[in-house]
Length: 226
Image 1 (cartoon, rainbow, N blue to C red):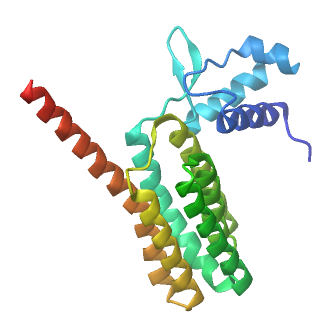
Image 2: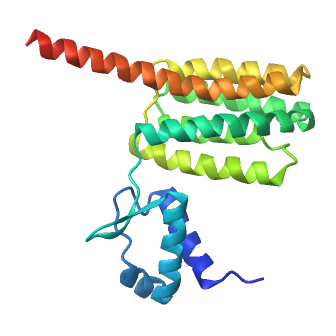
């Protein structure tokens, strides 16, 4: 079944947002989009309303549709949800992951470590996404898989606009990756795997919170000293 015009517009906009073509704060001008893609304005308006409902776009007075600018609070909310979804998906996936898949996961983790050593955050992020997708690849619940994929896409946008790893957290995450692989390879109870995967994501949130609190304290101390 062919996609409707509104679905086509939705995919164009969402992919553009995810890839950075439409960066946070960019106005989505309906007339301009209609001319550029030779699709009438009505499907674009439907697509924008859908993106607004999903949290990708804000409708701003006197500006129209604007790609949402995410902040740390938004990142934390997404991470809290992703931790629960991905923990469950990893637990469902674990019994179906072969030795070859787990060996590939270990290789990805080693490449992440190399990317950190080479100060290559872009490669680290891409490899990290691939690693987590691999551990969820055996999930036999299509709905859960879709939910995890959607939240990962949202997280990519948030990272581009508002998120940096707290110092030292990236290396700690690699050790947690190895621990997850060991649990899966050892046939650990699904609840144990789910808890470990969930804790891994939430550790990112706690690291950022601690780092921001430290920075705020230093700023306050510097202000009082002046």
